[in-house]
Image (cartoon, rainbow, N blue to C red; front, side, top):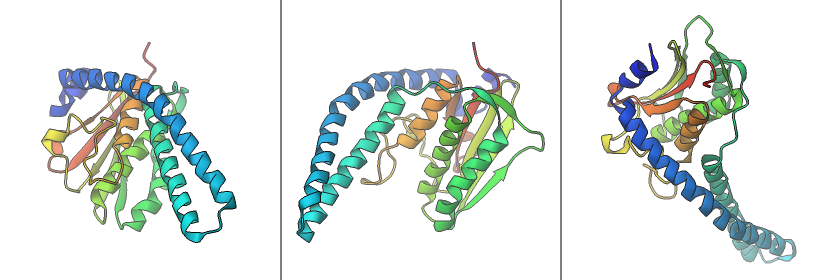
Length: 244
């Protein structure tokens, strides 16, 4: 299957739709890079000041308040770090790797969270090894972000299926869950760093943005496969060989 055939296999995977989305995300990259620098320094000052005040504070209530200030400043700092990954991602360190190893590492990392909420994690892979030249650490991070997104959508119970496959040009990793699905109006925005389909207070949509950023850095792509609706399935396609 060629790259064009792969993209046309899903309504949300059409080249025109990908192009519009990628142009929008490229503009958000520029915004994110500038905003990150402006916001990070004040957050660092707040965190360091709260930490310094904690050293000599003996009042339990004030210690709790200072600890809360520090924790929230550090939470903001972590969000800025995610924005910086989106705005200026590190170059992939390409090396021979196997998709099965990436999936196995991801499962090891995600199993504790899945067990805690009684969600079944299942891996479907061909008997033949799928080998590619890629950054295995980055792809593990990207696949983990897809699984974490599915876990948060399910919240409790359900099943998540990781499927490995390949075409003539691409290694394919997909994550499908039997949760509430992805609304049609959200398909074009779920990879935006400032989008969250979850209730307020549960964080921004940086996980899927990480996945898109890593896919782009490898010359690949990620998209929603709407052919399985109402189930939710997100596909990560990475070139088997580096693109020149």
